[in-house]
Length: 151
Image (cartoon, rainbow, N blue to C red; front, side, top):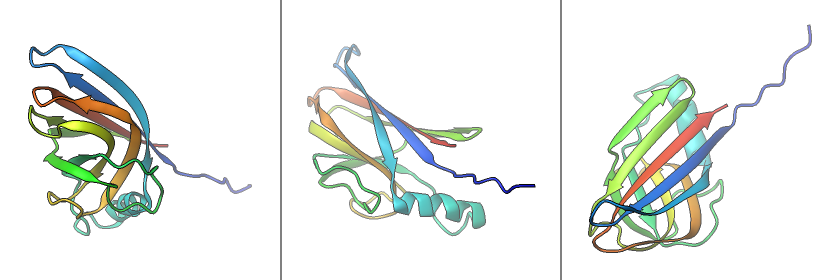
């Protein structure tokens, strides 16, 4: 019987929604993301020993424009980091959601990432993406939904 050559590849999609103060959707973008090497290592470590690494708890946004690479461990220029609203796993898909309230993460946003630490530029980076400018005004709120599929 021949051996099968199976490869596991994490893939992601990010949805960013900007809402005006009256709750109306102002902008929505969908962006693919990169599960970086530290994220791939994190996924493998979770299969071995769940106590080895802290779970993902925070999402960060920034203004860096350098394209995401496998070797990334932080955002290019982190602006702010918020605690995740939720994470939900169904079969081979995990979805993370974070909300940036008015006054939080304001400005020209061009990158985002998921971490397992509250402090800027610390913790394990699971995934990172860069994108064309998404402008968040001081009175706007922003919801980012990040879906990672292991296939």
